[in-house]
Length: 435
Image (cartoon, rainbow, N blue to C red):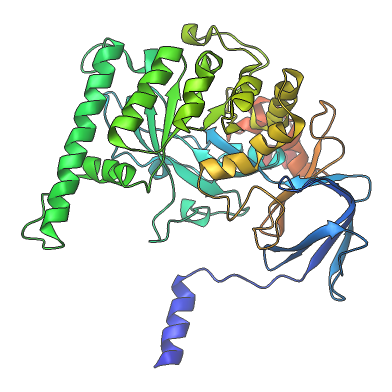
């Protein structure tokens, strides 16, 4: 009976295949949670980091595959806390409050954006619905494994097995439109308060029912998502730009007790002390070609430095396509140029982002026991000339710049960012037309 059960489970559950140990030797290793290591060694086994340290101190297993990365830089895989790849479509025009939307129901895992992300060194991402709604739905945290056939192959999961993610919210001009959307900032806040009060009441009814289905309220998918926010399971990822909008978010978070990450914060530098006092982290974007949105007119490169110096935890995000994910490293370089510490900027690409997603026990630093997610660079990560040579996820290489197919996604333009086939009306080469 036990044998039959084990066989059955093996058919329906993914099985982690054993990996031979690998030792990456000779690189300058940037653990993020410790000082840089010259002539370092990273040992991986079965998808995890087994050891990391100076070559003189690390015993390489006799059966390990040795990979020479001398002269290179090795650092943790990049964590993007805000991205829109996958051909997604979330909430619609039916109303400004749609917390029942699950963005993973609309993700195409074979979208070219995933290959661009791996080419940029991204290994963990938070895919978000858009910001045109006050509540636009549930985000999803994905591990960028290669060869995914369905979205389930990429999920991080909560302890209960459900796909892991947060809740997307927004304020400011994005959600201010014709009815049924709000026309003012005050009305926007009022609508959000109304929904969270309903969620509090729904949670109270569930608690009173104590598991008795006859006493439980009628199931409400919108309220279920918000109850997860109220209980702290699901973090609110809040799009906000102007300083007054930022303060409104902090006010709502305090009023209803939900955890929140402030995203974008173009004017975060104006209220850095208030953000720090609230103990709220920020996910920011530093674009090298500012413009477009009026409420972002006061975006400055010093935002990261000002927030860091105020004691705010700072992570970076791409908001891809706003910043192409292949240029994510440039974000840290811009931050340092404007006054961020080097350590803080590199942490903002990795460990801080992992902490904002509650994934710090899995990723974000080269710490024994964590997932073997890392990238190999041909130079300093803050140099504009540096290239990602390889990206590894759970001990498996998912991007190799020396592979011509991967190289296309690393350097290609429009065609490397979309799944459309080129129109070869006048080309006679049969092989080229079938690629």
